[in-house]
Image 1 (cartoon, rainbow, N blue to C red):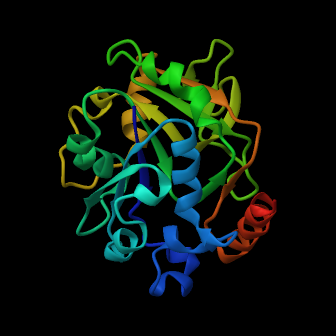
Image 2: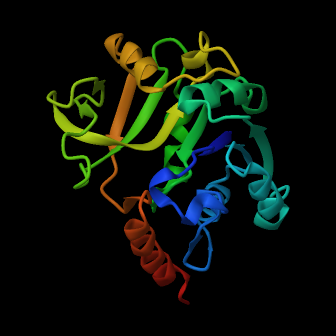
Length: 233
């Protein structure tokens, strides 16, 4: 089973920190933010990881190398300009293969148990089930939420249905979801998910543990404080 970490964003809200350092390499708890994802994925058995990048991407490759120091194999999907989420995933499909895969936003800090997601990932069949989303309580900066988690585990495109929650940026996808998304062109993920939701092809679950969108210098400081507690023996 493979995983992908999305790391192509410019990090505008994090400037000037990101003017010379890509956001995934910002220090959190003594190591780059993206390394926390790599370590958690590796511990869960996801040892083939694809990372897309655009802004200052060469720094990401130089810092992380082939992944051997983390016990994984890293492959890179370089984008001349950021292609949005769906465009980035579609472009990376040749590296991801034909089986379902996990995608993680590179700019969140979370304690998600990726190992526990493996059975759900394997159940994505490419027809009846195309995606499974991890949803979190609506943060203060996004009170309206994104989608509705239904009692049967389905996900509605309307946050007014079921329990209105926010998409965590962590999803399980079958490559078939991106079958009609051209590689190398910008494309957003939300329209693909909403179309699949209309066909009851998307399931989801609520993650009640730690999840932090590291999108501003203030939240970067919060993430750093949390990760430093993790790093203590």
